[in-house]
Image (cartoon, rainbow, N blue to C red; front, side):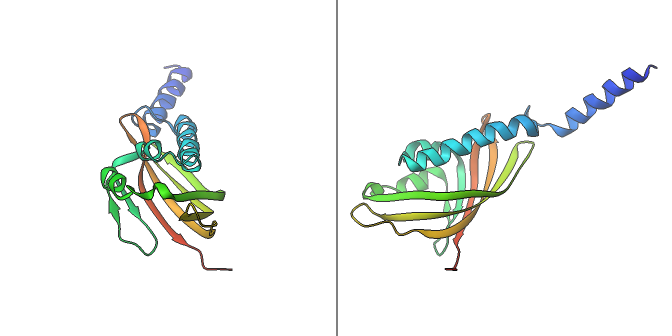
Length: 152
């Protein structure tokens, strides 16, 4: 057989093995980056509903010094009454990020504030790990683990 046939065959097998659910690392990374940009834009704009819609239905949050929260609807109910509080993030830096098929992760460090709207911001250095999955064809946040950095 011709060499070009084997090159095409091996290339095709590599693509099939490398890609799942029609999401290849290159295209998946672009879509993930767009989703992450939306996620943090929704935080900045205090658009809680849109931010929650970027989370998997069975999302798990593991906050620093707080009980775990399981499920988007439980989180939505827990946020009732938080309209008088401000949550903001600044100086976010992605430390590491990778996409593998329909799963991805990001490791971030940043400062955040969560304070009553009548109080001044109280910025705390922190870090997190986000696990993202494809759910119904879209990137969704599946796991959010964060903890504060000690004062330097």
